[in-house]
Length: 221
Image (cartoon, rainbow, N blue to C red; front, top):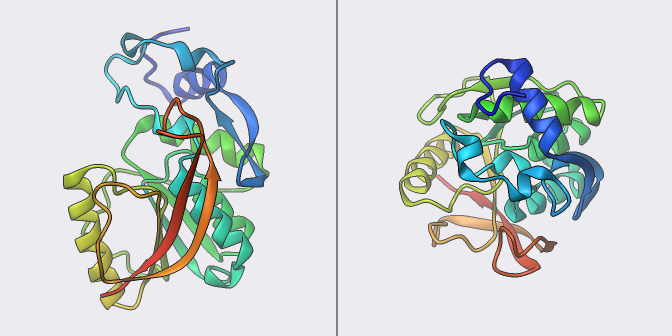
């Protein structure tokens, strides 16, 4: 198998070969192709991902995304019958939760080409049809969207600043904006309502503790 996958088929083969299907710890109703200590990706070098982001966000159910997915499944009225956009979808976990909760339409969006492959595989694994949009949607008006979801996007200063400004613009236009936050450094300090708090099982390979507290916030205009 090529170490530098480029086609959709090669990307999907890369994901399948280096991850394994498993239930999401806080959301066992859904299964994802995940990297674990038993899978090759866990020990793969950055060189194996040469030419790509060497942080495979698509391979792990991050704490903020788990919290948001759990909240959506516990309170399906947040998305049921609504048109939903999942920003920085990663594995597609949050988008899959919205679809399972009865959203009228869900689009999963991410910059990383690997996410398209991971989302397609994870959607099929759960028997859910999930359209994928590639690229950077920040500052898009998202006409027709009722709810924007963001699983765990406050970890990097520039991304967080751009995203929060966009979220507030969308909220001012009537879009409900729900974000998961596991205490990331660049989360907003105000201008939101806390919708839920969860204790999320994770792993010390990607976090600083085996569990993290994560909240779900609704951004205000």
